[in-house]
Length: 315
Image (cartoon, rainbow, N blue to C red; front, side, top):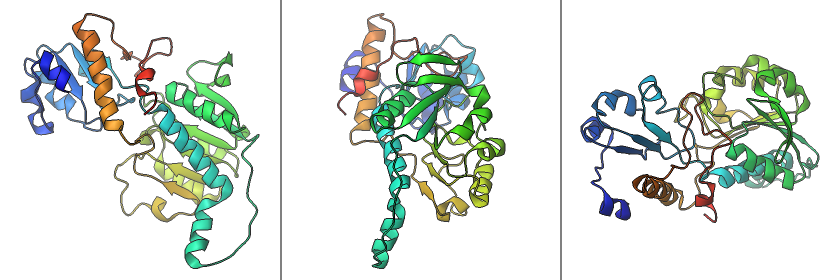
């Protein structure tokens, strides 16, 4: 932030002091991207023109007051794409090669030979066709998997997915896939899209991976589907309630892999998020178009917009 401090008056605050810090501020950098403090402090934003959030998802700040205002909203699209794609490939391999069982047997000192699955040729549906979904598709295709996408509009000839299905047809699509990866943005249309009907439509051998938003899933329906054997397993990095409550059955269910909202958090990610904001701040001072401008009606950066994915390269 040193370069920004040389060019502007910077106020640092926590949630409690946000309203006071917002008064008279032209720009707001929401570094704590899980914070829900912005809506409550919004009445103090008397001259705000730009809000940047240090995440790809913008649902914590996309409340009616911001949506209806003239304040420009930008996100940190591009920082986490490859790291999340690596995570997804990792959990797919973990399921196919039965790594969790191998570790259990190792700790028990038990030599038990088993056969495992191949991932080459397996069908994957990536629900969410933004930059993270595209990185996942490229990674899984490189491993020999057959990947399709589900997004707002159906199309063919996509460079990363080949075929993109309309996500409104999700339940009809699900029976054809061995792995289903949720990475859609959280909107009114996507909230709870993975419910009892969706899980019942999947193959009993299918695995579900959520690296998008916890609220994409009706958790009680997922638990019921796992208990009933409607799906074979789940890898979950995000949850409706975080931290995951200690009493959640997900902690101890077989064939469930849990991680604490860390699929994109590589060494150096915090510094990279600040660098993304600093790059956009330089553009803002120069009067140049900002990177990663979110369409506040859609809740994400449209695919035809330019983004700052190059900022994350090499990290």
